[in-house]
Image (tube, rainbow, N blue to C red; front, side, top):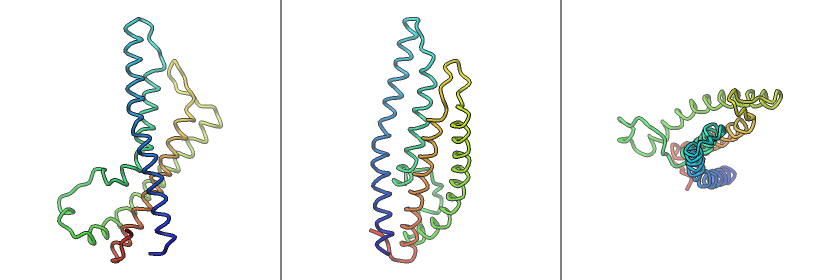
Length: 169
């Protein structure tokens, strides 16, 4: 494979690995927020921001961690006959199926960008009593989708190389 493709794969994989390793600690942030919520309710001073903040942290956790999960191949896969195939056959099938992922990510990104633009233009807020701005979590959503798209492209290139018998190390 050309050096440009190898460099792309190396850079994207490395970046998503680092992002994923940092984001995975977001679960502890969410747990801390929920612990604070429980503690504040027990002293009868409940904070109205805790539930929604925990939801935003959790959304960022799984959206930004999606590319890392894809990289580790730890997503759900139906493995009735796939596991019996040779690595080259698996790669060829993955090349075809990842094209469907690209279509899904394209529409997800299109919706995410338009929703983020709306949130920024009209200063959209949540309908809760706390009423936080929605733009930050929507920006995180778009960044996560872009990272997943970049990672899917890296996997596509690796699978394509493996399918033609020239794997990228």
